[in-house]
Image 1 (spheres, rainbow, N blue to C red):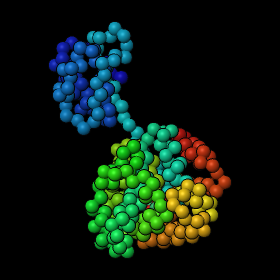
Image 2 (image 1 turned 180 degrees about the vertical axis):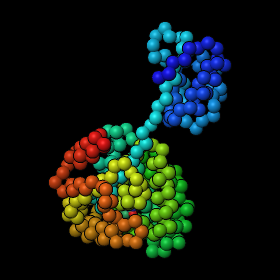
Image 3 (image 1 turned 90 degrees about the vertical axis):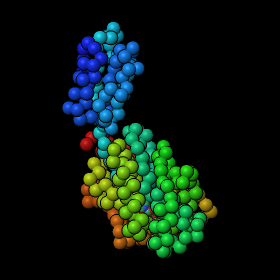
Image 4 (image 1 turned 45 degrees about the horizontal axis):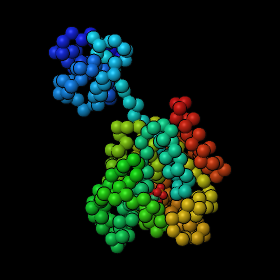
Length: 286
Ligand code: DC
């Protein structure tokens, strides 16, 4: 924390502006005597960083000083890849809360596209038509929940039909390029945990932490069956899990595979809490 003796406002602005120029930071917190706060705005150098002006002085009876604090946010990514039903999204949601970081479910983007294709009767085997549909979608996230053209899609994108269609539309290069660009953009300026198939290998190959969650097809199908979003039988879900694994692993562009530097976690005999604990342990130690 830098302490500046307050003599007059002009001198103070000059000193703070010099500090803004000389420091590398994400947030600057300026603690001012109460009566100065109103006249502060617009006097600082234009910066795209966050300027927080606080009238709460760090010490009582210290009204003759201005305190300046530079905060650097540690921007890092945690990539969690793995096949369908390996527990990625549940684990990532919990970890994002524990570490207070952003969560990005990359699969929800492919699912939303698949959902709209099915809804609009688009032939999912025609890459051009699917890409055209993608261009009609305005994809945003609010509190880590996907919103498409202003609507939260919720469980509508979690049905078995949408899962199967998502696996098809995600094999197209044009689709992947556009969605991967969005994923990089969303995670580039804040710490984020992302789950998907190609996060550690393709979206963010330089991610600081990489994990690959796996489990047997039977265990994963049972988990999907238990959280059923439609009336599919266990046998049908198992068959589809196996088909989807094959499609995701053998497709030409960015197939599902463990990054060579990812930590493998097989969750067959692990609870959600066990997996969360294991990942947090690695992140806190590095
Ligand atoms: O993780 P999920 O089950 O929600 O993903 C749905 C489909 O989207 C999956 O079959 C493959 C595809 N997908 C992908 O190709 N790349 C990602 N990063 C995430 C999902």
